[in-house]
Length: 314
Image (cartoon, rainbow, N blue to C red):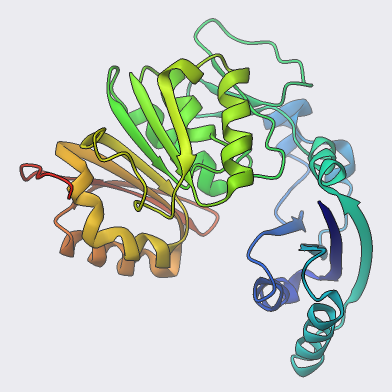
């Protein structure tokens, strides 16, 4: 498939507005913002941070949206320009054609090994890493799917997996993306994982990553709109993860408990801090209790537990 990358260079102060406008075209944005990276982080993360990033302009940012060939490109560009003009946003726009393969290759410039929690190390197959004795390697080639371990929401989920998942548990991963949470769970001791995503490209990427990590024999990966096509014969689950967005989590809240055993935990992430109360209220109304949470750079992960007996999924 052919895509057009529409890249907008802007000031960091306008970044939220630029993202909001471009999200109307497509929610899958690539954001380049290095304003929170300081020189002293080099001593903490060592070679995990590229020197070019450390020397980047902290006041400049860029946002890219990828428009498939079947969409009306001129209309999308006109809309973006019109909204920026209405918002008095001063920016520079550039466009470039790229194939699906070239898009996937763009990740390799920025994707380096990432240590998460105490034991997990997420790394691409083309990078070398000196592992410690108890490290758990999660090898990820994200392709065109979300989930490399670098975003706060993914790191928060991985940390909670390491903290709360018990060996032998059966897990459901809703909106699996690249399959990173499913793979990490299996390597941390989950007995079996059912991983679903609405995007067929994500399903394909997740299957490839499961095979690359040699855990595909303990996983089912398929296409589903949230819980719609989840294997009902596999339910209930003792652990569920969903790294999505607040509005979708709230939409899931009335139903997710039906897929959980008594004592099961639900890891909900992709939540900006301002929406935290809304998600908690929705989950509590659905019969789940908040037992843990974590925050990083304005993002929140919430851990809920089901204490009541489970009931069958229709």
